[in-house]
Length: 118
Length: 110
Image 1 (cartoon, each protein chain N blue to C red):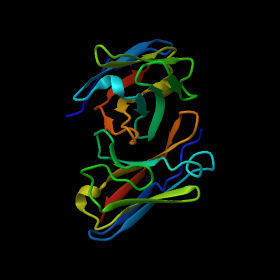
Image 2 (image 1 turned 45 degrees about the horizontal axis):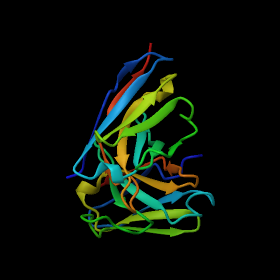
Image 3 (image 1 turned 135 degrees about the vertical axis):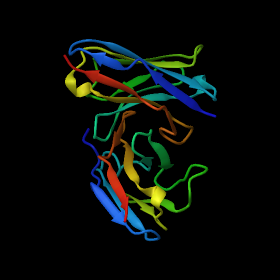
Image 4 (image 1 turned 180 degrees about the vertical axis):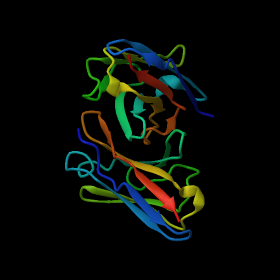
């Protein structure tokens, strides 16, 4: 069974940093692209970033480019999202999601809540 | 990249069919057959329902179907059931390895 479990969310101050982790199991992690997607309270989904299976290529939404960094550790089946220069509008539930062979975002974690507030 | 446009809400009675539209541009929906749909119940993670415009992942009921015409994609739910009450999001590839979601549609079963 594919399982994705996010962690690392919490309260951060404006201008601060947080590092999210997503632990994957139930599939050969090193073969799949991974994504981070967020959902602000009461709002829709927003794709943030993806990373190729080998980790050599990363892409970002304009809203987070230059502030957020996606990375992965294929030996430990982990994907990360380093978030710097946090703003109030970054307050959201952050999900990691896998891309299947043809199916985008075919499996999702349960999400981790990030609150940016002073 | 602007979000895809979806109606805020759609409703129907049990057994009826409803259709949710998803309007994009020639840079996303109109240019790629990479439209997907996700169902999200309150407090839960999204779930993939349709990919590549009209393909269903294994385990997804054939009551769910997708289509596309020009820059508008659609999700149809036939034989509406109480468990179908949820938020639904469309998503499209937007080129340069980027993805854009719709604003979401709340489906209410009357």
